[in-house]
Length: 279
Ligand code: C2E
Ligand code: CA
Ligand code: CA
Ligand code: CA
Image (cartoon, rainbow, N blue to C red; front, side):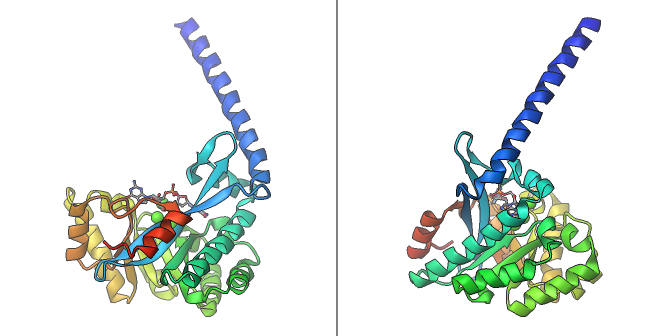
């Protein structure tokens, strides 16, 4: 037993060292990734349930690592937050999403909004509003086509600060949405005070709507709550026709998920817009 214990201990230390080393590697690489142009944005369509048309796209970052291949955000966003690198990376993502959206418009591919995710660290950065304004100015994208996705925990961390920033962003003319709605620590009374346009129902509720009556009830309630507050609702993570049916019955406005499309590269997204691809 003692021996097993010692072996286990050795096993764990070497594994931990390896992890620590990999982390150091990634951190170092992360610092250079922007200069080397290694980040890319994929786009996932959001479709309107009434018109069946693509009305928006969410920009989702990936890291095209020279050695590890396509690295998903879950592997590096946390580290980027800890190191503060999320601020320049996030600024790049806002700029790039605006540029791409404007490009689609110029090519006559319609006028979907583009949604960009914001991390907590960016939200507390001094010049966030200037950064968003600069992206719109430099790319020529009209503000109404940019949507900024925030999470409940991000806005609830410092409510007064959040309301100030959100009002400034709203004054620019951008759309604001609450991502992963229902999973965070939120207070419904604040929902009224925040100048929000859209609620995005988290995938975890949508997942089981056709099998778990509690999740079904939560989703129906969020939709009706949103509508009584004059907000739009997007259901995330829609994978099946049964889920779609439930959401349609309960008059959800838009859906996003693998059922319609996975996140795809910009060129593929452009073709989908060109083809007038519908639900
Ligand atoms: P999120 O904002 O909640 O984005 C939705 C995630 O769900 C995406 O994962 C998307 O690929 C995935 N998804 C979409 N539809 C389905 C579905 O039908 N089924 C399932 N199982 N999954 C679906 P992804 O692209 O790996 O992004 C993960 C998270 O990374 C995002 O979650 C967001 O929090 C963060 N992230 C992505 N891009 C950025 C960025 O530019 N900046 C910041 N700060 N965070 C980002
Ligand atoms: Ca999001
Ligand atoms: Ca989400
Ligand atoms: Ca999420």
